[in-house]
Length: 89
Image (cartoon, rainbow, N blue to C red; front, side, top):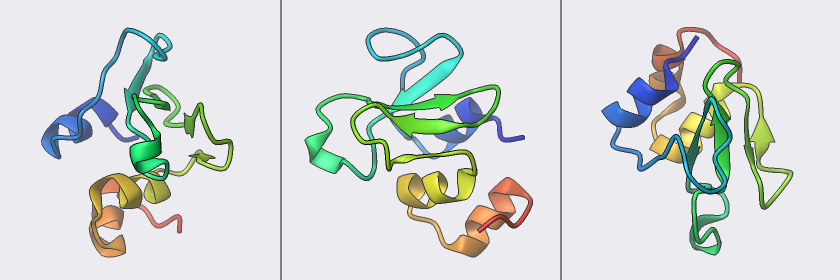
């Protein structure tokens, strides 16, 4: 299981764990697929299950971390596999 807060801190991804649009037990980030169209942090990450999703666009949702990490961090698939520790492309 990924420690999302540690990972967000490690890669300097701006995020919040409280306030508007942030459910308890979640971290929110600016949706990497919405880009500048996302005026706030509309992509929530469930810190327990790892499920993630954008409040603005239903196609920007998922359960596997690889796709989100690729969009957020811009790392290679190999680097992402090393972070996650298993292959689920």
